[in-house]
Length: 74
Image (cartoon, rainbow, N blue to C red; front, side, top):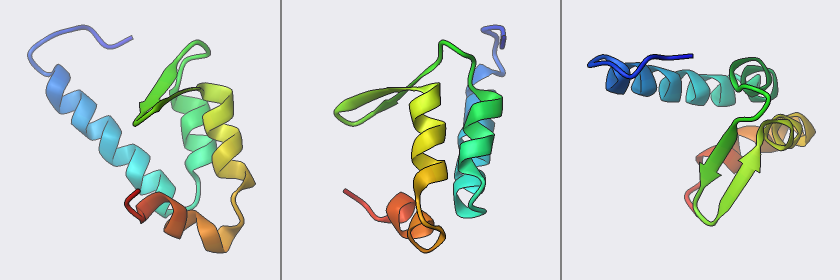
């Protein structure tokens, strides 16, 4: 667990970047499965998603659609 300290904003930005790097490298399912705790939730515009659903979503995307689905603005 990350302690709430002065470096928390930097840590969160690092984690955000790591997540996007995993998405672009087509390994997001594994990344989110490993880095999110069992009870973690991913908050998205209009939705809150549990870790298992996040990992399953990225694993289910066909390879050709993964990059487009994650980088196209809503």
